[in-house]
Every structure is written in C-alpha cells, then in structure tokens.
Amino acid sequence: MGRPRILILGGTNEARLLAEALAARDDCDVLLSLAGRTEKPAAQPVPVRTGGFGGAAALADFLKAGGYDLLIDATHPFAERISTNAAHAAEAIGITAIALRRPEWQRLPGDHWRDVRSIPAAIGALGLSPRRVFVATGRQGAHHAEAAAQHHYLIRSVDPVEPPLTLANVDYILDRGPFTLEGELALLRQHHIDVIIAKNSGGAATYAKIEAARLLGIEVLMVARAEASAVKTVETVAAALAAIDHLFPSAMKRGV
Image (tube, rainbow, N blue to C red; front, side):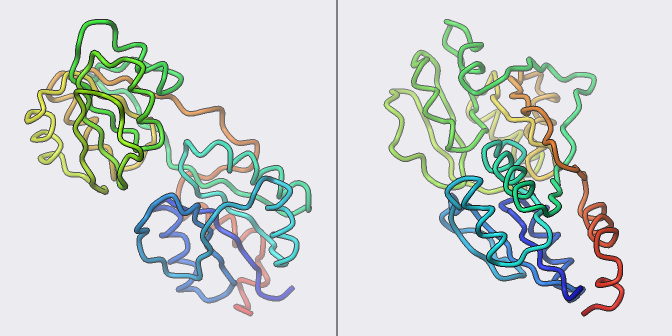
C-alpha cells in the first residue's frame, strides 16, 4: 500500500503530540480535525480542519471520500458523542479506529472525593446550604449552576461563558492549563473555595487542582467518565504509534 492516510480527531494535548510525532516521521499523511469550540486553538504541527461532521454517517462519508485508512479518536475523555460517532463511522466503511485516552486520576490518601455521574448531579450534591464552589469543568456545563443559585460560584474556562449565567454570585476566570500547584493553592485560598466540581479527565495539565484540594482538605465532586469506547483503546502517544506501526508495518518501514 502507499502512504497511510490518518484522520485524528483532536482537541487534546495528546492529539497534538501524536500529530507532532507523525509529522516528524514523514511516513504517512495526517489530517487533524478540531471541533472548533475553542476560539484561539493552539498551533498544530499538521494540516487542520475545523468544525463538526454532522453525525456518524457524514463522518463515514468524509473518511471514505478522503481515502483514509485509520481513524484515531484523541478527543477529550468526556466528548462522548463524537467518540460514539467515530466508532460507528469507522465500522460502517470498514477501517480501523483507535481511541487515545489518558488514564483516569486515581483517588489517593487524603483525597475527599464524591463520585457523581454528571455535572447536574454534582450541582445537586452541593446541598441546600450556601457553599463556595469552584466549577472546573469548562464552559460547556457551567449553565447547570443556575439550578442552585444559593451558592457562590467560581467558573474557569478557556473561552467566556456565553451567555453569562443568571446568578448573583458568580466570578469568571479565563485561563488555559497547564496549571501549577502553587497557582491552584493561591486560587482556592483567595476565593475561599470549599468544594470543587471536576471531571475525571486524567493527565497532568489540570491535575494541580486535585492535588491542591487534597492539601487543603477540600471536597471534590468528581464527575465519572462514561463507559469505555468499543474500539481499541491506548493510553499513551507511544502506544498509539506502536499500534500504527503494527497496522501498517510495510508502509511505515518504507516511509512511502
């Protein structure tokens, strides 16, 4: 076969690192697809398309028309819809799909976690008494806080929450990880946070808030991931590269 054509569904640091590694090898053609939800995405090392596909069938059509040999789902661990569409699309046209998913964070001694199934469930678990809540789940689920207006919220996101929440007690921070432990400790102390709502995203870039919560004895309402994808899953960029070499050994060896 000729040079393998690979579509990476990205938006994560792992997707960027994988694209960077493949670009450096120059033995395949890579396109990185971004959902376009971030207003100022980071620079990428390979050609990029931006925007959704319009469902599994449309993604399958895109893969088939482009002659792609492999689909790599390196989206955020909580991007359930696109991951489901990716698995269906690859199966529909008979190509391999791989999910690149960083491992979940694990509870350590000193952590005060309560596992919840969703952001609305986390808001409900805050209780009736007013609390100072750090919503560290991005802007996508921030509007759920409106269901419990008695609390004071601190919401951090890469892009502004639009429209702003209809809450009397809410502060916004625009920032992008990675975050440091010292910075997270200062943030939690400055805003007198007593509970954090976080997704179990895994990885190092946003783990500092979890470590800071442990050191300060702050409760974390941890939103669990959905069930694992039905496609082959790897946890590291190195494992993804090894899987690609296994799928296309002759092409990768020739570099053609």
